[in-house]
Image (tube, rainbow, N blue to C red):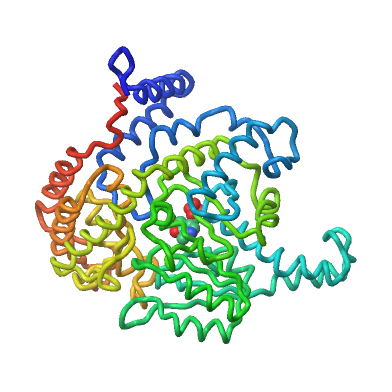
Length: 482
Ligand code: PLP
């Protein structure tokens, strides 16, 4: 919408904000402006990134940033939190309605934080509370030192079953470099080597034998739907809590692309997410849960989280309100249509895909058929104006650093308005770059896993094609910084 001067409200808002910043530290104002220019020029296929709306971006910069509000709605450790209560309630109510959840906790600062809140809520509900009851105590402070030491050992001796990293799981699902792997005895489930799909029978067998406290569903690099009804059956059979980390595909749940057996909120007791990936909100996290876990989840701050960021909760509330509009369901459907078109385009050009395709927002291409590593593919594509990220494929011989795959996602380009025809064009550009990339010789004369050569002219012609494609779909068309 334009103002009487003919300049859009969004343009004025951002111009004014940047001018105010420039008055204090011009270098920061310049970097903000440069970041918008870079984002406008890049053909972004990073599966975990998106572009939040101007309303979401503007909601982040406000006075809530100055307010401490430890605790939760109506139960704060600080005075003067009535406006934070309002914001947090609006965000939580929108989230509950959007996902059909019994309870929503919108404070987590990120996806990792949301997972930590969930783990400790489950430990508190399933281990700590029964122990307190057994010992006749109301609070941990009432325990003797000996009872407390025994309870701490019990809390630290629980089991978690999550998807393996090379099948697409996430580091926070019990892997050793992350705190979750140091807290839990972890085992992982993989995918069927023949199909690349989750093998529910094998998962059931592992769960029966391992008997985890928490069965974790969700992924960051698995290109297919997951049947959460079956996962809940397995969890119930072995007495585990089903927790699903829907960080990557929350937008597809919100947009009703994933329904029924594929909707984690219908089946899991605890669901965590980020708010910035396919959900297209501000960077942040959230926990949804059944009423069994709500009191414990609400203790996230100060249990494991620093004080809530009211300004970010304001932006989450705006993003959730946007996601409740019918246009968001259309957006979510276009994300998966675009991913399917990208996958088909790549397959037609002989690019091998893990599982042979996709039914979500991401595509995992195995580039080993081109004789290069994921790292070389990522670098050659970047040089050619296409931003992707390297990723392991199941049983990856090149490990997690060099990898044999690249992960591609369509949420960001779909927000820009690109459609299935453009996805086919992108597949063509990518196949051209991949086929023109060769490993360079390393210091020992063997093919390097990092250095590469790209045939003359390919990068230039691809950058030009990418630029032409993006020019037809401007990013933030209502924002002109003048
Ligand atoms: N969970 C999953 C499945 C993810 O893919 C990610 C991020 O990539 C996270 C959690 C962590 O999110 P954040 O970076 O917001 O902590």
